[in-house]
Length: 299
Image (cartoon, rainbow, N blue to C red; front, side, top):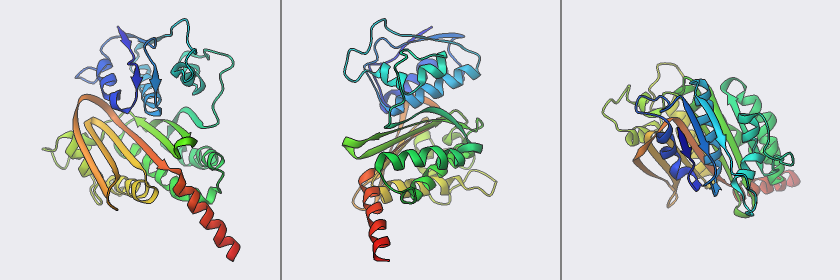
């Protein structure tokens, strides 16, 4: 079975990509799948994370997975295949780089798997120092970001039987933005929510999941509080956005007139597990860092 990647692989088409690979019984549509990269012309962090998560799932399912790359690539200024090579996607899933000259870009955290057990260590040792270097701010300025990221991993362990997520992050200096994409394959948020509200469709389930105090678990951990805190801190505190795909549900959160606005819908494509796409306004962080320096000077 051949799967041709779309020209533009971004958040808007990841559900359709999943549905091309996974059947209604949540199994691979074929025992052997070849991914054709020849038509790929653009890819966002969301696409890289989704590809990584999909390959991890297919490997776990025992699917014979291969990659078809065009003989000639890299002619365009922003070549998505070179971008994937620099993200270590091909190194991870084929065992070698496409070009020996490929290097992890200073503006990115390479694609990688992070388990819940080592997530806090990864945050403090890898992610936060990288972001501080990108923005030229003190690590202490990023405490709120570290807390938000911790909530993402809490969300994974609350909703996923896999206990592992694929993560990729990029700093866009010209846009004053950092994008963080994390995905896991598990039960997914809607299935969890339907334990307490069987009638909820997938879009409504996502809206319920981010309400403060909502929980589908019997353990002391409260998944509703985690997602609510994440969105509150990112959207209202950092002028950012949080987008969630899970099952057939898609939820977008953004800042409106000084309040968090929601937009949800039921998609025709299915995303197994949960995908989170977080965008942060780095100017807010720079202002906080500047304020900290002024406070220290006054003291």
